[in-house]
Amino acid sequence: MNPFTHNSPAAAPKAPSVLCRSLATLIRVLPLVAISLLLALGSAGCSKKSDDVIKVGEFASLTGKEATFGTSSHEGTLLAIEELNATGGVLGKKIELITEDNLSKAGESGTVVTKLIDRDGVVAILGEVASSRSLEAAPICQRSQIPMISPSSTNPKVTETGDYIFRVCFIDPFQGTVMANFASKTLKAKKVAVFTDVKSDYSKGLAKYFKEGFTEAGGEISAELDFNGGDKDFKAQLTAIKTAAPDAVFVPGYYTDVALICIQAKQLGLNVPLFGGDGWESDDLIKIGKEAVEGNYFSTHYHPEVSSPKSKQFVEAYKKRFKNQDGSPKAPDAMAALGYDSAIILAEAMKRAGTTEGAKVRDALAAMKDFEGATGKTNINEKRDATKPAVILQVKGGVFKYVETISP
Ligand code: PHE
Image (cartoon, rainbow, N blue to C red; front, side, top):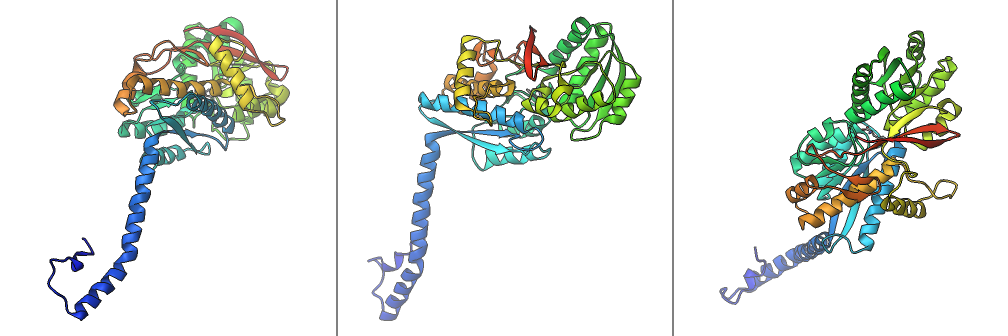
């Protein structure tokens, strides 16, 4: 409605009272007009601004029980975005990374990813490390037709959610087999106990694939026990494990629980090797577990010692950008390297698609082959997973020592 119609020259001559009323109306509506104008200008300004950048969402466990996972992954992702923006961005625009913390808590990832998509209008989602949290977000991204790339979730169900969901790491059927062969060939174990976190999709999956692989290799599973991630006392289960007298114990858990499990195993005199998967990888494993984790093994995605030129470049840039608490250069771990790769692969897919439109970016991601990144070459297969080698590390002298690389 035009508030000035009253004063239109076509209007009939007005009596003074009519004129007064018109004036009063004008005074009443003026502030409204001014506000509307300001709002219109403001939103034009905003939409112009958001047209100028490409918004990418990230969700990560920046605090809470798996804080080192989210922090590392975020730092790798951030480094990639900063490098991309320093060289002109993507499709002539800068990338704006919007990061949300899920506090390492179940139930939070769905909320923050919905916010990133609905409120912030991101065109893609990067995350998460932990499979259970990626599994919370994946159906939301799939429904919204927003491509999601998990840097390091290894449970097969993550990408099975749908054709918009990708990952840049290997999956647990492979990781489980690698550790099954390692147990039988390198540890020469005949009997292995398996200790599973039943709250974690990652742990349950990796335990299953390990058991299949180990029995296939001729081994025996001598005990199967459960825990709940976040438990503090594992002694009852460890006592049962000790009674079964295994040659080694497979613990597909995350570092905070694993460190306590290693300490309590030692206290109970369970003096056989404990070993696990990528969930062990954190400096906090050593900080918490100290000598109780010494000598143990785990598989993961990457180690800075195994490096291609692109990987070396990444390690240098990361060390320059991020510092440890004591101020020394921080060496990247697997999550940092995979976080970096998830971001550069997304950017590359947008470049190849020539747009940020979901379906086209999805197609470009699905076609990604031999892309050089921090973790070596990424090949996206028909299941939207990456086919990549695994590395085995050992805790030795308070650091992670490279043992071997196992190719798929
Ligand atoms: N692969 C683990 C999961 O799916 C997460 C993880 C990745 C942990 C890399 C450490 C290093 O839950």
